[in-house]
Image 1 (cartoon, rainbow, N blue to C red):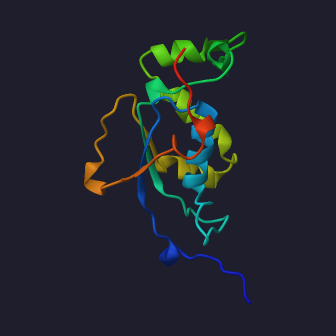
Image 2: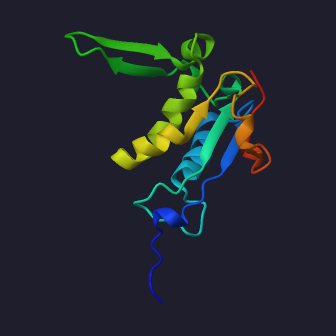
Length: 154
C-alpha cells in the first residue's frame, strides 16, 4: 500500500459557518484551526492547503472561562519602551471584537508560511450577518459537539 499524498486536483474545499455565541473561545479556536488545516479529512496532507473556508459570526459574544477576560494581549511598537497591552475584555468591547477570536485561531496553527495562507480562508464577523450567502455555507454546530463547549454569560 502506498502512502496517499494529495495534489491540488484532489483538494475539495467547502464553506462552513460557525456561530460563536456562547461558545468557549479556546474550544472554538481549536475546532476552527482543525477545519482550516484540513485535519478532519481522511485525505489530509500536511504540506497542502486542504482546509475549508470558515466563517465565524457573533464573534463579540464569545465566552471565556475563569479570569481570561482580564488577561492581556501584548504587542510591541518597535520603538524603545514601546510595549503595549489591552485586556481581552477591552478588545471585545472595542471597535474590533473579532480580533480576539482571530488571535486565538492564529495561535492554534503552526507558525509557518502554509498556516499564514490557511488563515486567509478564515472570515470573522462581530455581528450575526455575513456577505457570503452566495457560497451557501454549511452550518457547523459547535455547541452540540460537547457540553463543555458552551458557557452561560457572567
